[in-house]
Length: 401
Ligand SMILES: Cc1ncc(COP(=O)(O)O)c(C=O)c1O
Image (cartoon, rainbow, N blue to C red; front, top):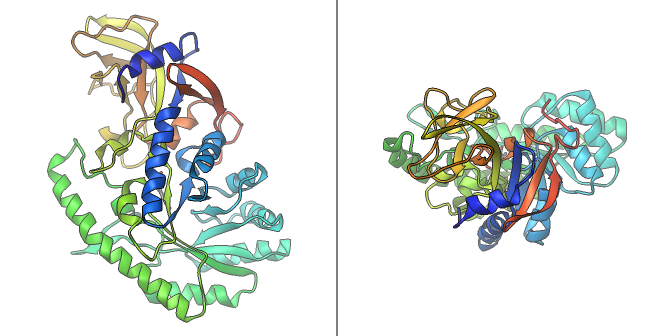
C-alpha cells in the first residue's frame, strides 16, 4: 500500500463529506505502466475494459499513458458505446451481445459517423438484429465472434458460460453465415480465458485449492492457444483476415501476452487493483482505489462502527466479495455482520486508535462496481485531492440499469 497511506489519504479527504471514493493516481499510473509493459513485451496492444473503470476521465488517462500500446476500448453496453463515441473515443469492442432494437440502432448510428464499433456475436439471432439495423442506417456492422475457450477435462467445464461456440465447425458455420450477409463484416475474434484471468490462485479462503487451480491454469493455457491458432488458420484459409484477436484480462496478462495468435489483450481491473487481484500468484500491482466511511460509534474499545455499508461485489456470493477495511492496516469486518445495510462495524487491530468522525478506508472486491456507488472519484496525488472525476453514475448514466 505504501508507507503512510492512511495518513496521506486522511489528510487528502479532510473536510470532504463521506462516503467518498478516491483513486491514488501514483498507484494507478504505476499499474498502467506494469500492464502496458506486459503487453509490449508480448508485442500486443492493450484494450482497456471500461466496465472496470466506469469513469471516462480514467479511461482517457490510461489511453494517454499507453500511447501506441493502448488501443481501443472494450465496452459493455451499446448505450455506453454511443456515449463514449460521442465523447471522442473510437475503436470500441462491445464484448457482450445485444439484440434490442434501440441498441443495434445506436451501434449502427456510431458506425455511420465513421467510428469503429464491433459487437460480440455467437448466435444467428444476434446477426439478424445487427444486420437489420445496419440496413436501416445504410452501413455495414462489424462483428466479433465470441468463442468459448473454457477448460474441459474429466467432464468438467471451467470458464465463463457465455458462448455456445466451442468447436471449430461451429465457429466456421457462423463465420460463413456472416460472410453471406452483405450488411455484416467479420473483423474480430474474442477468446476470454476466464478460467485463467478470473480465478484467484493464491486465495486465502480455500488455500488447499490453490495448487489445483494453478495446475488447471497451466493445463488450460496450451488448449486455449491451440484453439485460437486453429480458428485463425481456418478463417485465414477462407480468406478472412481479422482486424483483432482479443484475449486475456488482468489476471492472465502474463500468460495471454505470450500467445502468438492474439493481436491484443484486455485489462481494466488491474488499473485500480481491486481486492480480488491480491490473490493472483505473481501479480504485482498497487491498490489504487478506496472508499472512505466515517467512524461514528464505538461499541467496544476495539471496535468502531462506520456509517455506510453494502458495496458487496457481484458474482458467486462468498466472503471474497465483501469490501475490506484496508486502512488503517489490520482492520477486519465482523464475520456475523459483514458489510452492513447502513452501518458497518470494524474491528481495529491492537494499538490502533480511530477517533469518532475519522475515516476508515475500504477496498472494493471488484474494480468497476465501486463507481456505481459514487458520483465522482477524488483523484489523489500524495496527500492532496488534485481533481475530481465524474463516474458514469455522476454523469447520469446507468448503462446496466
Ligand atoms: C470479455 C472480457 N475480457 C476481459 C475481461 C477482464 O477484465 P479485467 O482486466 O477488468 O479483469 C473481462 C472481465 O470479465 C471480460 O468479460
